[in-house]
Length: 138
Image (cartoon, rainbow, N blue to C red; front, side, top):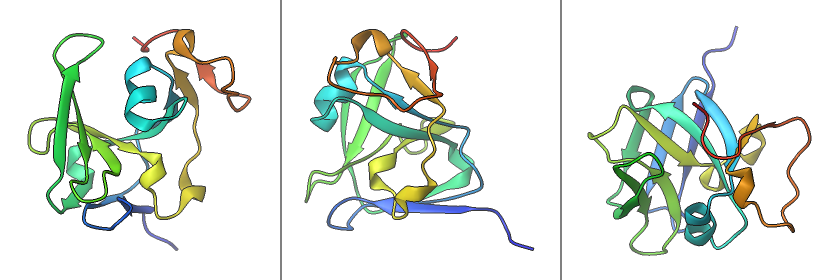
């Protein structure tokens, strides 16, 4: 019998690391303008975990910007290599968005939804079978 799934990852240089136990609350793709600009791509693949299920190491830098539903969105990146790793303030939020590009084992990412499809560039093809949301789900 095996235990809970372990997810782990980090930035390009390894200075920022994270680890999670158990399945994420959600997995998806976000095509909002902020995610596109932050990633330099057409979308950001993400996983949501409860803060209690995560541990972090290293000292990330943060960039804060207005969030879709008010407040601030916090993106954490490595000050050495610039790798974007996770969202949310450590000790400030009850959940975190982990950017799936930071996974050590990319095969663990299985998206079920796409957010902000209204903003999706025409050249981005989404996997079939995703639940699509024009903006954020309720």
